[in-house]
Amino acid sequence: MKKKVQKNKKSKAKKRKLSFMKIIFYALLWFFGLSIFFTLAYRWINPPITPLMISRAIIDKESIKKDWVNLEEISPYMIAAAMAAEDNNFLGHNGFDFGAIQKAIDGNKKGKRKRGASTISQQTAKNVFLWSGRSWIRKGLEVYFTFLIETFWTKERIMEVYLNVIEMGPGIYGSEAAAEHYFHTSAKKISKRQACLITACYPNPRKWNPANPTNYINRKANRISALMPKLGKIKFDKESIAKAQERYQKREEKRIKKNEGKVIQL
Image 1 (cartoon, rainbow, N blue to C red):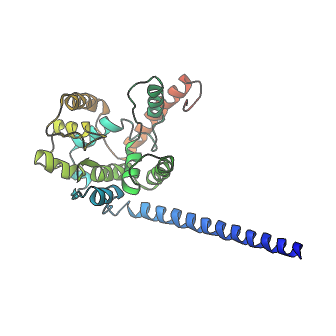
Image 2 (cartoon, rainbow, N blue to C red; image 1 turned 45 degrees about the horizontal axis):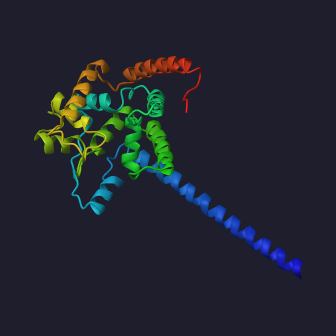
Image 3 (spheres, rainbow, N blue to C red; image 1 turned 45 degrees about the vertical axis):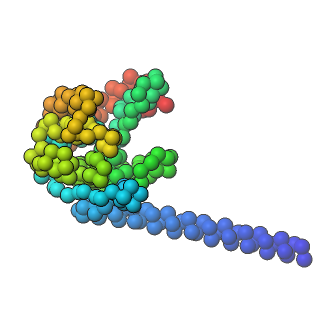
């Protein structure tokens, strides 16, 4: 009798375990399926809203100011300033700039001001698909979605989405809304100085105002402006991307060799 009861208990426990595993399996299947579906859809369809926009609207009671424009309608100054400020190697890497990550780790170890190493691709993945905040789960998902957009989107599309969804002030999202709000102009007509001032306010656009810059923001804008010519003419055609990838790969090989073959030294 006891053996029969024990057998029944084991059988029920086994069924519960199998049911739990089945739920996990289907949940993961749905997650991967939906994430790939939306990533593919957003290659052609503009994201109507982002989790951050929803969060700001509900929690902070902010109105949403955004006006989507194609990349052709955004000044080359804005594109270059974004790359100079956030991701010099955007055209060359595959979503992750390991050299920048190494510099950030080394700098943080030495007690310098903490610096991030998120690429424009990573920021786009975070802005479009994820919530704000810092946790290992969110960071892991950011890596996953960065891989997806780098796989299914072009660099041109990543930049276009980035410059249309990034937060550029309280309730202000994208280059067009920022240009209109701060400088009463359009993203296409924005000047080099104005573009540098807007990007100088990253990564804390809610704290700084590009139309009323502090000495710190002015100095940062000057550094961005000085770096922009070094990027050269930014093109998104296949040949230009291939050349950028080749240059980045050579730099990475030198960095890895310098670090005794280690990709990242933690």
